[in-house]
Amino acid sequence: MLPIRDTTPSQNYPIVTVALIVINGLVFLYQLSLGPQMAQLFFEYGLVPARYTGSAGIPSISAAFYPLTFVSFMFLHGGVLHLLGNMWSLWIFGDNVEDHMGSLRYLIFYLACGILSGVTHLLFNVDSKIPTIGASGAIAGVMGAYFLLYPRAKVLTLVPILIIPLFFELPAFIFLGLWLLIQFVSAAGSSGIAGGVAWWAHIGGFVVGMVGVKLFDLLPRTGVSKPIQTATRKKRSHRLQIVRPAQATDELDLKGVIEITPYEALLGAHKVVTIPIGFKNKMLKVHVPPGTKEGSSLRLKGQGRLRDNTKGDLLLKVVFRRPDRDL
Image (cartoon, rainbow, N blue to C red; front, side, top):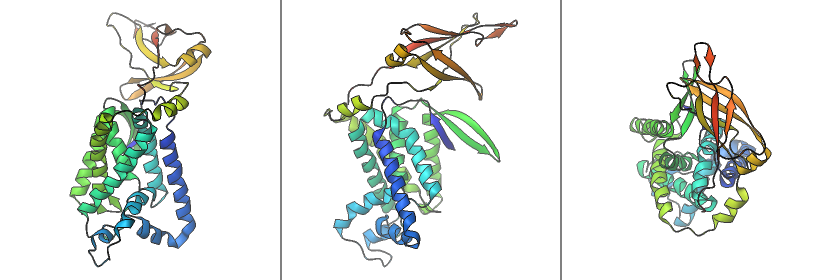
């Protein structure tokens, strides 16, 4: 399963998520510059459980080195596909979790999930000499938080059947639940790391993310993220929106909702809406004229129900996107 996008647009520019993606990319470029010495970098700054326990004939490292490697391992990647897969998942799920937490809390949360995912991996693989690297554990924590915060969001998912790519819109709780189940099955069928994949790190990160997002919500708000949130507030709503219209049985017209910002209402905007019909998505271009009022309706002629060769219209009620609570 490959997530393509989710249906929950963020209200702020995800500056921490973008920064993490950039940092991971720069570190990967540095790795490539090392050539054959890259393997030594993985061993020194990756997570090697046997080095912490002194087992398997590898001397344990000093306690002063623990914090560094428990952070550095999550910024190293074994190849282009490893990096792209992780960063794509972070891009899809990270912006919404950052929206909810605020930038500073989100950064602390991300690092905590990565560190504790490494601890989980170590506990299940105390004798392993294989360096564990990658942001997967930290990103699994972000996915765990998303699982609780946006369970009914839809995730457009690519599922290849043999050579045929099929696209499905899955509720987030189903997509992420299946993902977690795959991690459990894979971990149960291996020693915890096989083919370079640290399954228990993924599981640990996901569970830490679910617990962590609840704990972070209990902490008092300091207001540190408020100026960041104000500065990064998006002036425009998501260009691509999904509309699931309601329809009375005795009417030809369909009714749905389109979301814009007051800024777009003032100046006008162009949107693309998709209307799920079975496994297909009907896409329509929508023009929001300048001066549009909240609560007004945009009429798309001929896009409603067809009956007796008569087509109804699609009526989209305009609602303004409201900011989340201050962080």
